[in-house]
Length: 313
Length: 289
Ligand SMILES: Nc1ncnc2c1ncn2[C@@H]1O[C@H](COP(=O)(O)OP(=O)(O)OP(=O)(O)O)[C@@H](O)[C@H]1O
Ligand SMILES: [Mg+2]
Image 1: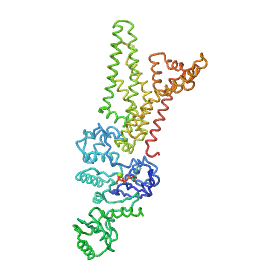
Image 2 (image 1 turned 90 degrees about the horizontal axis):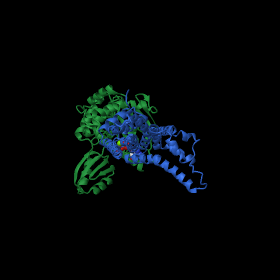
Image 3 (image 1 turned 30 degrees about the vertical axis):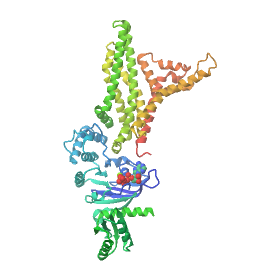
Image 4 (image 1 turned 180 degrees about the vertical axis):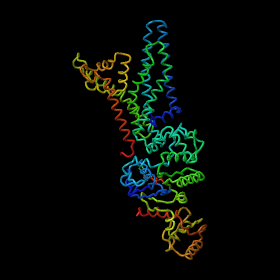
């Protein structure tokens, strides 16, 4: 459905915002596009939607090369940006009819289509509400409805759940899954992996303008090896704990976040237990100590961290 | 026929907008006040029945016409200057650009919406103007012609506003810059010509030779106020008033451009408008940078 090859984009600063990004979304997929802040997600999505010009790279949509043909590209895409874009003094219906007309669906046809998309996103009975007076959850749905007006083949959403409460967020996820079942291909970005991992069928992890990992989520889960960290939470003497861990030859890397330590430890179960004993005997209050289960999350941190370290060297 | 969606949306928004309502209300207040002053001022001096007061409605009409023009100069830069930058601030511009609207359509819609303000003000001023029309001499048709004349300058001023609105990200800056540009065109051109005249006058020399500003006079071609003055003089006077005005600054009897100043200035200002709009359209297109 969507194929991107070697996308480069540089803003006026030195480093590339996109550094040869490749991306592949198959038809009917719910594709999660994850990366830390500033990784280049929004930049990529804006290029896909024709709001930004790439320095170089190729884009194919539905088998057609659309790199040069923005009009074609736009007609196949519905875009929900990372902001709402509401007008003052317009009702929901007027808002939708306006965008329908902007897509070339005029008058009666526009009204009909507006009702259809409201139905699609489960928004009913709000036709005469002013758009800037709706709750964020409803505005988000309206945004989605707007993006569906021109029957796009690919739906592009940029961090759609930022600023929504957990319940609304969940409802929105269900809505997206429902749309996927109805045959829409969806590309959704987020900087929170856990939010995507339980609904997406595929995932791509971007870091510093490069795709560091992408594929079907089942494949990725399988391929995650057991090189997961041991997660330790201590209540005192964090530095001493870190020193102790560093001194251990089986620990090859440590990351510390306040009193939470992750140690990449390549020992057996017994050696793990010995490590815990060491910590306790040193007078450190350990409140949690466990090998992390295989998780996408840790892989994500591992990938995005590793790339960062590579940059710094 | 389908309207430009942007235009249609703006009209819907404007009819509910407090800002626009205040602008129209303020303009009407001013027009009404002037109409009343004209009406009672003149009639109390001359008395109701004197035949001489037949020129009064014409004079009132003229004052109203100029007032409408200045109201237009005040409102259009504000409305047009805010048009695109407000969309940018509300972050709806990106949404517009992802639809099938091309930048050009967006800009034309915005221009139409800005110009519609003239109609709203002119026609909501009907009650005030009807005070004049009861005396005869000026009718509805004249008013329509007046609106058409206002539109010529309105397009020019509106294009300046939209150009600034695309160039400057902040709405306040964009509106201020549109005012500045309009002032340069309206006051600046006259100031430069007057300055040239004054300098020549100072240099003196031959007492009998009148100062002549030469080609500087062509700056008048860029002045929307003088265009309005010239066009209006077709309605109220002989149509040669602008040329006579130029005559004050030098001998232009054989100068073709000066002799045809009104149509030429209309043409030149419309051309400049197109240039401003094209520049705005290019700047708005995210893929042309
Ligand atoms: N308009 C711009 N001008 C200059 N630099 C920019 C611009 N937009 C983004 N950048 C830079 O490009 C890089 C990628 O930004 P981008 O917004 O694509 O990241 P992101 O993955 O969407 O991040 P976030 O999770 O914060 O939304 C960042 O380093 C950012 O500072
Ligand atoms: Mg972003």
